[in-house]
Length: 295
Ligand SMILES: NC(=O)c1ccc[n+]([C@@H]2O[C@H](COP(=O)([O-])OP(=O)(O)OC[C@H]3O[C@@H](n4cnc5c(N)ncnc54)[C@H](OP(=O)(O)O)[C@@H]3O)[C@@H](O)[C@H]2O)c1
Image (tube, rainbow, N blue to C red; front, side, top):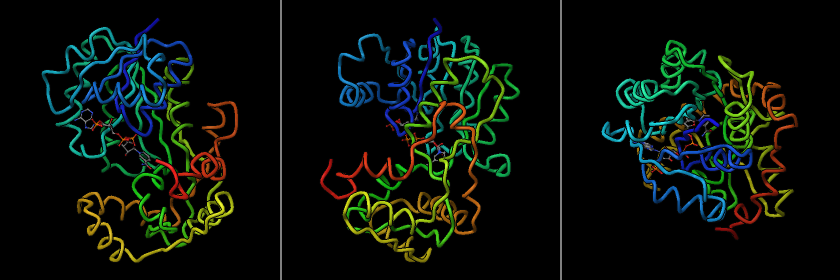
């Protein structure tokens, strides 16, 4: 059985992906910047017992000395671009070169919806690299993660507001657990080589509608604040978020505001053999957190 290397652990997609791969009986090596931390987080989520056969390797894209040992023996690789790495030609491609030299034959990339129109984003460069690499590749191009609302935007959500500058634009929100399951499918089943999948939820909602769903499911009134881009910038700066990170978010919510984030595709349902999780499913599973009662 091929050894599957997973980057992006712990992370939104990487953590549930490891769970999905283990559930399919796959051999997994977690390739983490902080292996001990990754092991601890996975142990908390999956239970220590579930990690018995999992290997933990040290991979820091910023440290070339970690590459060779990390990829030795790996045949399939899940690639996450850490959000803070924008110069992928410098920061990631040298590691992928080593991975190919070490015998990686298949790569699945966590890419981005609309990447084919956004040639300047780092994911586009990674896709082009993989297409030229000679390895089999699968591009997973998800829409906006629902989990952003319970991570990046949790402080405001727990005060009863969805605080993003997206106007009345629609977004085809996707749950990272479904993205992870899709990753496990393409890495463990045949027929997905050299393909791209646009992973969206099965509906496209405004943030006002999401707030209404959250309110109905959790019983706690949640409103959509729809701040101006400037108010959003000031608010997140006051919270200590880095300017560059806020500007990336402004761009993402600007795309939504223009009505360009709402495209729904059947790709995810086809890969999973079931409908993707809905906003209501997400709200039910995170109700305590949304109400401010969970960790
Ligand atoms: N958020 C969205 O709505 C959305 C939608 C579509 C696509 N995406 C794409 O999804 C990707 C992010 O995935 P995610 O949200 O699952 O990731 P994430 O939760 O932000 O986790 C990032 C992971 O990268 C690791 N990492 C950071 N620096 C590293 C380095 N130098 N070397 C090795 N690993 C490093 C982190 O490890 P540490 O914990 O040790 O730092 C962490 O495990 C991005 O490329 C983003 O553009 C996001």
